[in-house]
Image 1 (tube, rainbow, N blue to C red):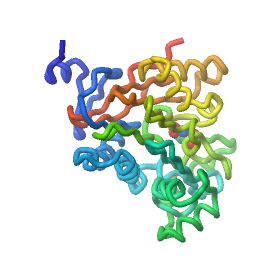
Image 2 (tube, protein in one colour):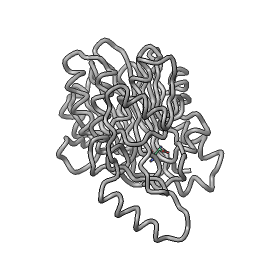
Image 3 (cartoon, helix red, strand yellow):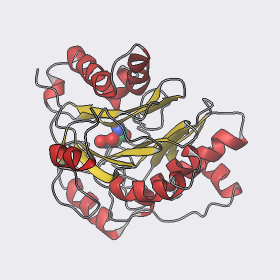
Length: 322
Ligand code: SD4
């Protein structure tokens, strides 16, 4: 029997953009039509921009890019784009990738001085015969395509970095509890999927370190026949299991989005049970039928969903319990 919208909302305790509480668990009876889902609570704001495109019948790829640009431009978001935490030398380096419904993909890594790596990644996909550009080459390509070189380190991020420098021990930081990388997945009215992932990476990482976020198959994977997945958390662990590709392949075998994410987390734990106690990894998946789900290692991962039922924040209440 179809659950009424009112009943559904009271069951999951959903909130809107301005709400405070978060919900529990995933949702597998999707509203028909387009949907966009994205990691963490700042995903709510990204979804608003993405939904403007999806709601008009626009393409999922355009929605992804528009959504990802929101946290990239936000100086208060210290894990993505402008205002992102720097590496251990004090330099902000950005990573991003994007995938479309045709299996096209583009990626930039170790990009400095460009505020919107997601848009550069899209151009790599659309204008070059390559998938990935790095560092200086990626920056040259961006500038040649009209992007401005800008200072990305904000006063606030610089001050936090200076505090961190006072510690004697080298310790990169991934925030377990709160805001991180944005991974964003969308299904449009034509039934096509796309995805994107953009980050400043692990705060105070070694210079040159790249995580999972810009790596196709690790931080993001889209297969229009099946679904899409993205990851957040300690990228090294996600890369080791080719996490997002794994999630999509599990959905191909019939796993629900949440169960596929759970299996990927479980594999990470099995490989390294001790380390897993101290890190966070979360996966988010969208099936091509519009159902979605998430699973994380530690409690504290939330994600935002905008579909015909509105824009809501879900707590991935499902986390690894051993
Ligand atoms: C990375 N996965 O660079 C990204 C960062 C992140 O939670 O998502 N941190 O490893």
